[in-house]
Picture 1 (cartoon, rainbow, N blue to C red):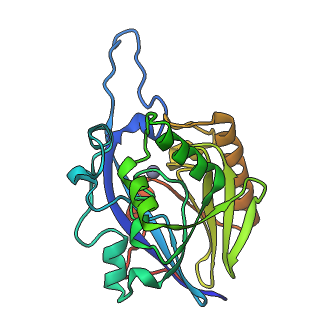
Picture 2 (picture 1 turned 120 degrees about the vertical axis):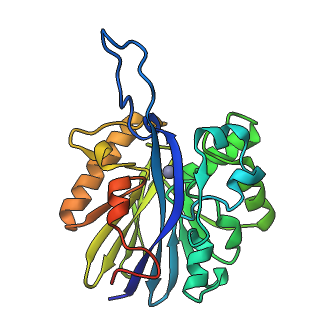
Length: 274
Ligand SMILES: [Zn+2]
């Protein structure tokens, strides 16, 4: 078996209106017309997979200076993040006695602030992202549009550091990256182009890392519940159905993007799954 270990890395905690994750979590009624939003904790995770052929990182979390001038004020207000000293991918690598240069591949679920914030620290890595996602984010940047969850300073850093991108085209639905690691290209849904990972471990079995394709258990249902933020709702539904088929086919455990209950059950680096 080619994967030796999978480490879960906490990327800290975002706080946001729960409606970001699950559409309309509260609704008005005849007695209460003005319902208040629910302000909720939303954890961030990244996975580090130790394969016989090298280290693979799935998502990178937020930039360490996110709240110190890196993000625009709008992003800081919408989704303030706190990352502890022992959290984040750089601290995790240090804890394991590894360096950023040891990472061979980075697979990105998408390019939002809480997943793609640390790419610039890995200029030696091959960075796999959905072609559609890279195009969509860069296009927004070029057109000076509303960036939503994409961070201008992140994009500037990617250009400056000459990141070694490998866009995965729409036509390629799956790709075996290394033995026991399959990239799942889901297409449009939460954003322009989403990707996930199927990781096979000897003792723990198969894990489907779906990131924000499905934010929480509540979104997954059934019945499916859309998040507040989905660029393509038809794509979102199709992705969820595909994930259900994969879950069944591989008898896999689905790890959601931001599920606080699931997050509390996980073991974190330096512990690991084998
Ligand atoms: Zn996210």
